[in-house]
Image (cartoon, rainbow, N blue to C red; front, top):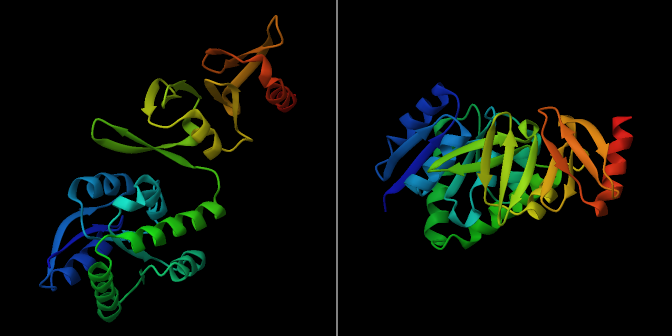
Length: 256
């Protein structure tokens, strides 16, 4: 079969090297190249490649960020490309996922590609790959339990929002409105799920429908019934619920 391949690397020379090697393979079609993680997420959804050469260490959104943004069940086979990273190499070995260690030669490239071909032939349903990628993400997540970025999909566009950019989050049913400086982004995720992914030392749920970034809080005003009004640096006022007293007290302690 023809192997449809996507190349993802922020270094032009690295992409050129992979392109040159892939073009010598008679059964390979290069369907696209990406130089960052956000473009990779969009391209994987749009082009549905069979195999992705995925750079691990990219600015803003690394290879693990790409995996986080895509349902592993929809993820193609992956050959990770990386400079030396002891943790990453161990994780790939543990979960039987192939990688190319920069700088790599033609022999190592060909070995990885041959293994990918065999995996795809053997696992046409993708179930084994799904399990391995899920296990890798759990491994990485155990090392970095709190999200550093959130994936936003808007009108066919995919981009990543750094959590430190958030002012506050409000509930919108099964969606959440993410408020940043002058912008609002809609994300399909519940408040409960978002709360579990954010660092509780920085993000506090003051109401069932509101999570605030403590770094954006300017002042607290006590209400008449035991609740508080949280005032953000941009002037936005958000009322807390009375049953969030413990969290608000923690916030007061921090402010002192």
